Amino acid sequence: MKKLQNIFILFTLVCYSLGFAQQTPAPQQGRDIAIMGATAHIGDGSVIENSIIVMSNGKISRVLDGSQNNAMTLQAMDVIDAKGQHVYPGFIVANGTLGLVEVDAVKASNDLSELGAFNPHIRSIIAYNSESKIVESMRPNGVLLGQVVPRGGRIAGTSSVVQYDAWNWEDAVVQMDNGIHMNWPSSFSRGRWWLGEDPGLKPNKDYAKEVKELHDYFNESKSYNKGNKPEVHLPFEALAGLFDGTKRLYINANDEKSITDAVNFAKTQGVEHITIVGGYEAHKVTSFLKNNNVSVFLRRVHTRPNNEDDDYDLPFKLAKHLVDAGVLVALEPSGQMERMNSRNLPFYAGTTVAYGLSKEQALQLITINPAKILGIDDRFGTLEVGKSATLFISEGDALDMRTNKVTHAFIDGRKLSLETHQTELAKRYSDKYGIND
Image (cartoon, rainbow, N blue to C red):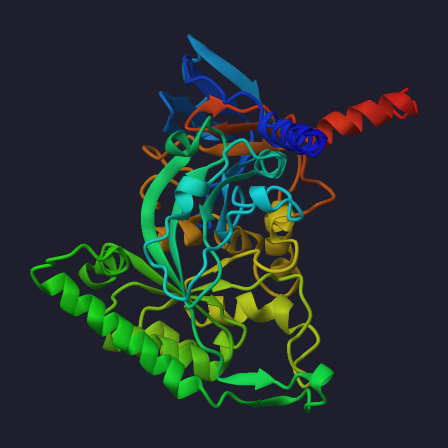
């Protein structure tokens, strides 16, 4: 009995720590809001130095050059004087897992993957925890939207896109079940040194077999979806969107052969919309990717080279290689401690500036480019009239961790709280040690 009581107490504490985290979602926009005088980074490569941006009913209703529009009436508007500051479209996390895991060591808070190899019917959105402490910590860096992606298996499941200020996943969803995620078989493997094997790279002897299994699975799915469907087969039904063009296939592949084989596989199967995720050696096949209209979610910038003979700075300059070749590319944060590191998304983009991209090109890697790939560019990704008023104001350059200080953030015109567990702790201990005195 005592053991049961202890388990109940532990469970209650865990639920309390996980359940009472997020700030109350902001109310719907009431009055029009005008942001005056900021340098507006539109997201399409253009900049307005002295801008006027008006938000009405959750949408951007005006984007003007303030130096040419001094007579605009501001009555009945809330005015934000942002002179000397910068305004940006909300940043978008591609290929993220925010909201699927809260505490790695607490199994009950981990909804990252399912058992089994082929799970196209698994929907990540219904496991998304909109009240995650980690999710709310994104907003002070301008990260306001993200793709919720399952992991594991050969076909991991279906992703959705959410905005980061909601009571529940139903309120958070922006684009529902619009992508299938596949982990392409590795063409090479490393020996298991702990078993005395050579730790170097060697060909995967099962590669052809694993690729054939994927072809067979897709062929069976197409046959099922063209037939009478006497019995419901949820995995096969989930793949139907790949063949009619309503879903995108995201393929995790990194080496040159895997990328080429994966794209050829998708084309052979009649998949229209293809994105390579990771793409470490995508710079070796840029013409192939461009000719096949394949976009890339590029692996985290702040990582080390994979191979001994790679340039030491290859991860930093991969984005420029792809942009210069005309490949549609966005940045993604997957890897070690990826949920926490998603807040560093703007600084990943900033690093690409040091290695050849302009600041506006780097901005596109986390705004309009992921919006195009995710199919939400009609609503998000740029500061344009008619699009969602999902944006933020920073005192400095948002791609520079030294100067990015977000003062205001909005999702659909709703003014967000920028308070998080981290800011509360910062205030608490600043007071304790008299830092602000």
